[in-house]
Image 1: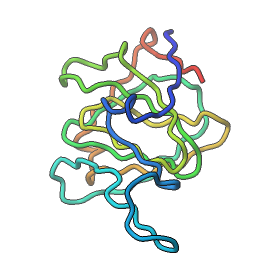
Image 2 (image 1 turned 135 degrees about the vertical axis):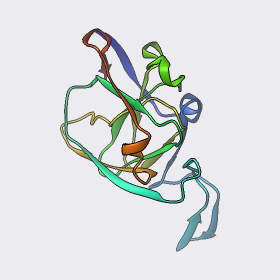
Image 3 (image 1 turned 30 degrees about the vertical axis):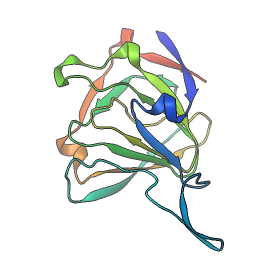
Length: 166
């Protein structure tokens, strides 16, 4: 079993996979001053022309820090926002549909609570992992019913499973 190290989320390291913004402690251009500050256009999510954004919650319980499944969406990006705990997410570059996941290119990032991560269309990923003994509620933003009509899920073979080192 191969092991990969968790990385700190930085603009440069995450750019091949998408974008992110800390929504609790914004560091962005703002309009207004205290007591009302508006941080505008911090992150954009490509919904692939879909007219309806759907907001779902993925509740993840503590489990082994391994990558044994992965998925991608061909036509849309995905927004991931940990609401009440930090999480770990794995990502890998988009590949042709029939090429399978690029296992040697997987990376894992620590996403702080309140930080919105936006994945580009085609980026490999799956449900977040909690790096501690607490569950996490994670807001997922996708076009309506993406899970049913644009979600390719791949279970990794035993010899492909990747251990995540904290």
